[in-house]
Length: 363
Image: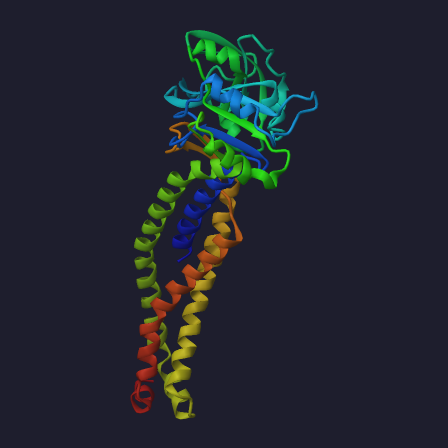
């Protein structure tokens, strides 16, 4: 039971860690605008005319320099070799403006400096710098037929930005020969006016765009992979639980057989069949509870582990950690108790059905 609960909780923690990583990537006051019908920035395309219209919308906050807090960004997927195996994997390249850095205060430079505008300099997220060749500080990474110098490493607090490389937006447009942007990100002056701004964007006949809160946008990015992980892990756990239930049933049948005399004595003293049934069910539930606690204790150690995998939505490498939540604790313990109940019901029913004379004679 402990092993089954460990598998069950670990899978749920994996899905929760993925969702937490991507949801934490965004801010409620930030809005992401992409082409209507696109699910990711990589699929989206916004020309300069549409981007200028979005930038002029009322309700957008202004930065310290008095300019609108808007960042028009190209986002491209490239392939880089991993440090340990040399195998290629997809990495997100994002062109960022000075306003884009201000929109993401959670991304802090931990080594080096920010890239200079108009140069072939980039900064890499911590996960990318640790996991890919050429992405470390003062190293050179090649893409779009150019060499780019990594002048800084940033830590975005275990969010999705840790799995990206950032550089100057205009330089990225030139390097990838693009005429438009992938997305427009801006900060609302008043977060409660999001619906008003969204309706203005969707109602403008010049725009074929849609707007989402940044938190909602990144939550959607985790939906496909987290759903797959949850369904697969739950299916495996249910299959494994059959073995655990059989084991609990065998244990309880052995317990009933070894305590036949006690059962007969209790019945002779006047205890009803329901009391015998309840006593063995409680014992089985306690076994399940102990197994659940042990399994959860082992699963909780996985919070110190970070893994990376391909996000089904963006097809890019994403690094994230396991996350244990109160909901997962409750679900795991309920699963353990359910296994204990199912495994102990038949043995408990057998004990309750014993006749007093037969039980005392067997003793």
